[in-house]
Length: 606
Image 1: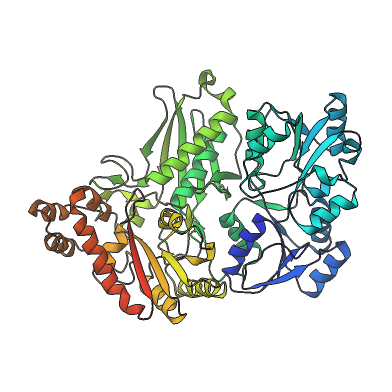
Image 2 (image 1 turned 180 degrees about the vertical axis):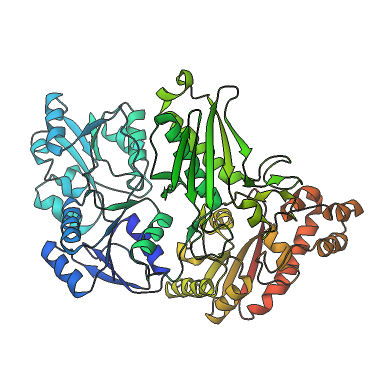
């Protein structure tokens, strides 16, 4: 079993990930007020001391602990570390993102140090944003000085404040979405004290408002965690660690795209080139802002350049690049600025229009290019003193290679797309989810069951992270569990929604899948169906498009080129395409309402 300690924003993220397995697990919180939306979690409340935790783990055969508790739950973290050590249970820590320690803030290791500073600098009017449980820690100060405390408007919080005999008239209740600056202007504190609570704790908003009003900010540093804890920084990294440490929990393993592997290899090579130190793993940022750690297989430093290799792990997705070497060779170049991408062995070259890369360029898609550039600039800022003339404007040449890429490309559609000489470096989310298997359809059903159990009457289905990101803003009140990825299994997904009795299904679809679906293909995997240009030309004529549009369709290599060759006044083409998609899908949802939203490359919805 898995035992989770939560009650925070991070705890809810852990629930989202673990519910995907459709297996029971334990979720423990100190009190029973924290909101928990889960189908498979077994809820525990009341907290555990060290002895009870050991007893529980032994009795329930706990094999993995996930610490998603508040960063300042110091006693809990210490107890988890002791139990982990005594019972040899690994611990995953779902961390928050913490800003760097800015020099314009006052940092303290303890409340005593902060009080000493306040006394020494004769600060007599303090606003405390450190939470109700710190009233006792700041008591030596507020007994002698004016002090405001902002707390949650809950009976247990008020009871703690009154028990410490804190003046009731100095209590301020936290209001969701309130303007911090207005409160600060009203109270006019001489200083503000807060905790290093991280981004999900609203740290940046507090700091920004205070500094804007020239109010000094004292920050209590977060307590150190056990070095044995394995830190992850988001849902993808969390799932990957669970798959590693508890292999039987999920039926399918996720993986990383070639773009993610190329980015990790690039960062490892650049660090090695600048520091002469090989990296066994590197952390990189995914397109959604999450950090993940990627192992580095090997690194070679050759004077003016360095090469690093990452082994592609596709999880349980049957990808031709699984287990292949993704190599990045990095060289500094003072003859140009910015990042230049060069074609290495086994990476294809673009010869036709319509792809992410220009003709003549290596076939490295837009998102991987962005990811690599971002990591290059992060490394530059960190190691600026090692750059030529210490200039951040130093140019970088990046050559991505896949030793077996030319052979692998013959098993893909690259030759048909006009990509010659190798595979493409791709990926929009950085993560590979195993779409091409029966187990993935089962996971869709499990996600639908979770949404149903939470009372959702509507689900929003999308092919993946990109289309979901575009469409989520339309439904701000839907819980995250109502958004479900169908991958390529459009038909199976709608059938499941119908079987479970959902009243409404909204499907977000991008043009590449829409042109296949409109012709009747309910499974849009590229191995099973390809774009039919004759069919599309027929739609163009039916929609009243000019003859030259139908002719231009015959020359396209990618469906997204349709957005460029069909003029804005030709929206009848896209409306007709969407209607054909609806005609194919609606019989699968006979008792429900089906809405289809066609999404262009910029996120506009038709």
